[in-house]
Image 1 (cartoon, rainbow, N blue to C red):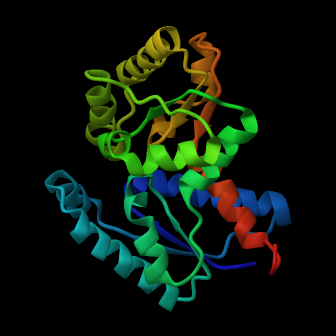
Image 2: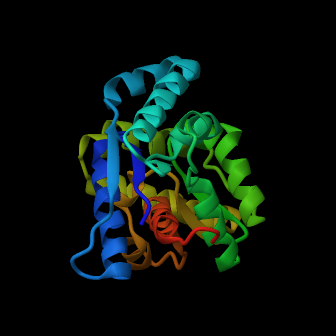
Length: 240
């Protein structure tokens, strides 16, 4: 089994979900006493958020490259970035780490393609929703058209992530707001799925909450999808 390097801490609220899901995947595949061989580079999220707000993506890229190099030096044979937004510099991270990187948009796009989704709604940070890197990657892999919320919905989605979810705050009024946004685009733009395009969104919503709201849409939780893809890569035989 290959050792996985995880660049996490962005935020640790979702990184702990990664840890649990990765171990659950390995346990399910290998047996009840097995766990995932992991190395975690836990970033301090406060300076990350400051540089994001300042638009210093070059500085953020340097930090991510250093994390990848540290994990590789520690023995990582594969890498994942445990956040959607920071896949903006995924190519540079993969180069710096010099080991295969399991890309969250590859995994998510593949799941969308297999399900035949054509018009998924993207719920994510403002950076992920507005910058083309993520949307275009999903569209290329899945052969679909990603729907991005307009204002004021976009700001509301972003605010809930940064002012609540990354701080461990789960509020019913925010869940209701997200469900109302999903319903709006279901009615107005004929979306046929929802992408939880921030690793914290799954802390607020799940398939059950969408079903209970009567929205009749499949949810694609990128955290869970990413963990399944990472576990499969860890277990893959050479040449697979």
